[in-house]
Length: 103
Image (cartoon, rainbow, N blue to C red; front, side, top):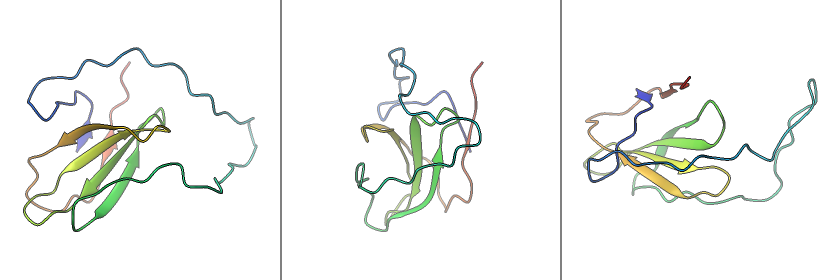
């Protein structure tokens, strides 16, 4: 499932404001730091989330979830944790999510 031209819950494309560059960084060869505190909590449908995928720029997180009657993909902004989109239409479990890097 490629996630690029995302459609809002109402069927129209959401216009996104020009984003600023992330403030996190690390030097080449420097190890990643694992946070010691929870950044945000993701609300999921009753049966939870089975798959997570960060966008190529690290600014969005896609969560393939399971509810009693559907398999939505919830997309959040990182590091804010703001819900951006809900993608519906899948009728079975997703096994992979891929992000398309826009030019």
